[in-house]
Amino acid sequence: MLTRRDLLAALAAGAVLPAAARAQERRAQPTKTPRLRFSVVGINHGHIHGQIGAVTRGGGQLVSFYAKEPDLAADFARRYPQCRQAREEREILEDDSTRLVLSAAIPEERAPLGVRVMRHGKDYMSDKPGITTLEQLAEVRRVQKETRRIYSIMYSERFESEATVRAGELVRAGAVGRVIQTVGLGPHRVNNGRRDPWFYELKRFGGILCDIGSHQADQFLFFTGSTRAEVVASQTGNVAHPQHPGFEDFGDMMLRGDGGTGYVRVDWFTPDGLSTWGDGRLTILGTDGYIELRKNVDIAGRPGGDHLFLVDGKETRHVDCRDVHLPYGEQLVDDILHRTETAMTQEHCFLATELALRAQKQAQRLGRGKAERT
Image (cartoon, rainbow, N blue to C red; front, top):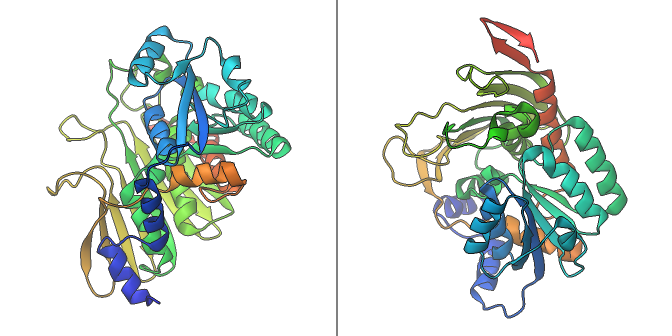
């Protein structure tokens, strides 16, 4: 049996844990029959391709899609020629052979779609934000409880980030002791002139803390192990986009949970000089050390993304995360087939969203030199 020190050394060196090794072995074996069939409704954000990739890696087969926008549908059909295009949403919802529906629709439309999916006896995976108001959250919770279907939100900054998955392994192994706080920074590039109109409309995207902030709320809960949490303070603002008065380009929030505290800052100010869309960072402070993730770029010069730095009582080291297994898609498929909660508990999914929504609702508004209530 590995000692804690041996386990930490193995993880830091890029070793594959036994469960991940078994998963990699299963993926290497040819699969004649997919484990489940899934479909897509709503393709307004490019995150849908990451969602499809995760479920496909987990043993899913994409069989059909529906999009109400002809141009988006045409591009999607060219990318997935094996996938049947439905004439209307109902075709997919009433297809008994489809177990799971994915969506990256316009954010305000995702929760109502999820309710319809669950009422048709199917499980659902939404892009984030999966829910844009507290009223939607209450309805989703009620229908999920009634139907016992899975309502999953793909928090891709954790589930699709090798460095974040590796950090989770290290924290569980005790690499930094007991986690005290997380600091999550989520900068993005706005790409003005290349966004659809809904991107700038508060009602449709839900607000910056609801949207980007939900990633950070998920990671705060995960790394601190919190099952109860509250928003201590939050603020949002439109600092530099007066041409889009409904937009928010900056936000931050302070969180307190029963397992630790958290600070989150999100923004749309990544400069064009950076080689990627955002210098996403996460710092995990523990009683015996800390971990810092540079998810997309190391501005000191190391190539690529998924950089993890581990500092403890003995040394500072850079951990290679390039070959880390991403388990979310496989775990979600397992959960659908076996009615379990291995990918993410339903309550965690909803609590992360609730924190982001409450922070959004109570945020002080930054503007004209003073803070105002939104």
